[in-house]
Every structure is written in structure tokens, then in C-alpha cells.
Image 1 (cartoon, rainbow, N blue to C red):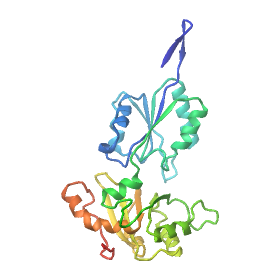
Image 2 (cartoon, helix red, strand yellow):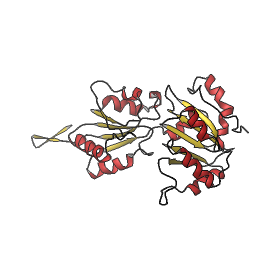
Image 3 (cartoon, rainbow, N blue to C red):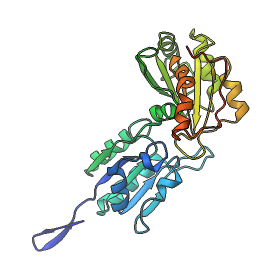
Image 4 (cartoon, one colour):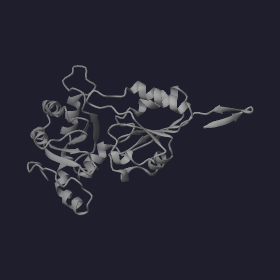
Length: 281
């Protein structure tokens, strides 16, 4: 992008769009997100963005993998920040593509601050967060007048046994015991620890729990159980990241609606394993 100044030409910065890709199904992208993917000079995408969405931009759009992976290979956040500023300062219009919503555990807030400090114009295009999409796609509402009037979303990465942890697991346990819904993102690896922390906080062992892996994608898979059984059941069926865990009475709604969702063809997880111990009333 250029601008005429006094007979010369001065480079104007491009715009960075912090775009939420949603849970993975391209049909769940916003109209604006899809348009930006088609018009950008380059798309910088995270590793959790589905291949189906990464393939949407035309061949003329440069695609840059800046994902962070659990195997030690990663692009540092500092490197991502610098790349965004450098390319936008050179006049490129960029899409910073993130799984789910850019401001829900996506570091979009950090990148927004960095861009603003560097004088780079940016916009935010919200996406459907997996915290809500994952459970809802398998028939579990985030809230329900008969079951839950509050929703708490946390990251499951953190070790709940840390003395100086950012999460108050006793407070989370009290919320669930009072009827609230707890959604844990990125918590597959620490599932046993998180379950133990909730149990230590007084959550009843028969509290319903559901997990959905790769929500909205062709290989979506779900498993349900109780706080007492979910660790063994998840390990038994091989739940892998990315997966969402939802804890609370709202999980009991699934049994009453899943068959109708499947009949409509809107539930992909037909191979879901359900625990008969989960109450339905």
C-alpha cells in the first residue's frame, strides 16, 4: 500500500486482521473471515487451524505456518509479533488466523497490544470458540435454565497442584457444585490432575462430564462419563488433543437430544461412547 506525498511515494502500513477460524468446519467461519482469507497478501496460521480452512485462500495468498506444537517445535510469540509488524509495515495486509476465537486463549490480546505499540492498524474478527461449540455440537448446552446459570472457561494446561497457580480450583469446584458449567480447554494431558482437583474441592463423583475431540471436523469424537469415570473412559477410547472437557449437570441434556441431532445429520460423533451412569433427569 502506498500514498503519494509531495511528488514522492510513502509506504503506508497494511492492516493486520486477527481472525478466529472457529472449531474447524469451514462452514462455521464468519462471512468476513472468509472474505479476508481470499483478499489477504499473507495468512499466518496456528497449528490447530484445520487443513480445510488453511486450504481456502487462493494460490496468490502466501501461507505461513507459525504454529506452536507439543513436540518442541515452535514459533515463539516474539517471532510472530515481529513478523506481523515487519510485514504490515512493508504494506502487506495480513490475516493472523487462530483456531476458535483470537481472544479466548489465543494470545490475540498480546498481539493486539504489540501491533498498537508499533503503530500498526489492526482489526479483530471474532470466531466461534470451541469452549461453546465443542459441547453444543454433541448436544451439551453451555447453560440451561434447569441445570446451569453460569459458565466458566479455563485452560487445562496448568498443573493444579502448583502452590502459586493462576486458577483457584477450590473456587471452580464450588461453582460446579452450585450448578455451574465448567469448560476446560487444552486439558487432555492433565485430565487426571484436574479431576482430582475438582474432587478434592468437593465436587460429587457422579457429576456428569463430557469430552469432545476435534469438534466440528469429520473425525469428531466424543465420550461421556462422570467425574469418577471420565479419566478411565477417555484413556480407554484414546481421546487426544485438541479436545474440550465440560463438567456439570448440563451434560445430562445430551442423552435427551443426541439422537435427534444425529437424525438431522448435524452430529458427526456417531461413534461416541456414552456412560450409562450419567443421569438423564
